[in-house]
Length: 99
Image (cartoon, rainbow, N blue to C red; front, side, top):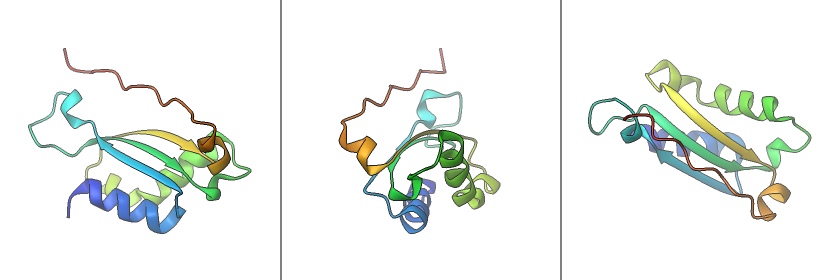
């Protein structure tokens, strides 16, 4: 199973998101072709209600511990409550890290 699918499955199970996007951004970095080491996650979940940003990020990091232990190198996170997501937030584009 791909790392992307593992991330999707894990976050779906742990957070029951109302919105989830997992984007492999490895090609923006100096890694071998077809790598799965750098991802962007956009997730909206009621599990984030009442949590500050740091708590939301900790929840995602804890959920994905197995993937980090297996070689996931970088994760950009954009975490929202369902109400925040309904306000049509703008998620910034990731920078191109390779020149």
